[in-house]
Length: 410
Ligand code: HEM
Picture (cartoon, rainbow, N blue to C red):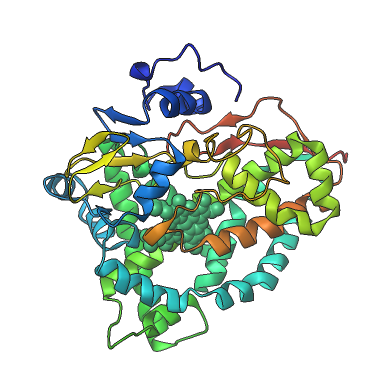
């Protein structure tokens, strides 16, 4: 994270560049300082300052639905199931559809339901850690970060634990399309996964209609406001979106948190011994290296000309919001490149803000706040094996590729 940005020229910035993807922080600095409204030929206008991003996220002149002619290109090039997902998912629809769907979903996906999951998530985490007891080392991603979010969501939806591998594979195939610039080569595999995933969600809905339970799917089916309900497409896409949106992101948060804490042993000691310190520590991880570096894959679209930092952004231009850069903006945070679990206030943008602010933030936080101290307490001698971690070569998702650790046990 320490490369020098004084030599970098914004004109050379390339979101495909693997060196940028390995360490985006110096480039974020250069964009914020020299080109805060940067027009990139392949991905649109890129914003990097906290204040601008915060404003756009709350500005009703920007929508998320893809306007013509981009929508037609998407319809022609994307498999029908992927197009269906993009047309019906909360993340890609504007008011009034967004208001209606989010209102109905929020009835079912409420804080009480998330808090009720706590004992079940704690028990599942304890079981996962039991399987690691005798090991001298393990990969945090493989053994903890991937399984835990899947367990959380399968508990929420009440789907069989035996389906976890299937859900994991579908999620990976579909989220591959969220990369920027968009890569149409990954679309066919994503389409196959989306077909299967939507059919799976359809079977679940039919089954819950016959036998309603105390799970999120049954609650989504029952949700009603002013005589309105979710359409079948909205319901299926919501089930799929909950899995897609909550999986990679939470896995990333858990693994990055453990890496940062093990890399800052005094912070790890504090989290291990003082359960109250974990909540702020997780917020600092979200700020310092949040899972989503860029807001919604579809971008924000102005529906009238909007001026930002003296530049007019015209309708039909996709606007990309660098959440990861906003969270390192020195105008917002003192010494932003320092990882400090006592930082206060934090007010990061890792969950977005405004209409589309993350619906699952409470669940992501709950899982991370339970699993991180549980791992540190279970393995008091846990240590990093590699000095420099390897990150997945992604622009949008900040996620370790592997995180090998030793337990100090033989
Ligand atoms: C640490 C984990 C997570 C992070 C960092 C995260 C991040 C985000 C961000 C940044 C957005 C807004 C995107 C935008 O405005 O363009 C978002 C939206 C969303 N997230 Fe999360 N998320 C996490 C976990 C979850 C979980 C666990 C779920 C569900 C179980 C979830 C479901 C959603 C949904 C449904 C939306 C769309 C909301 C809307 O458009 O109204 N997320 N998330």
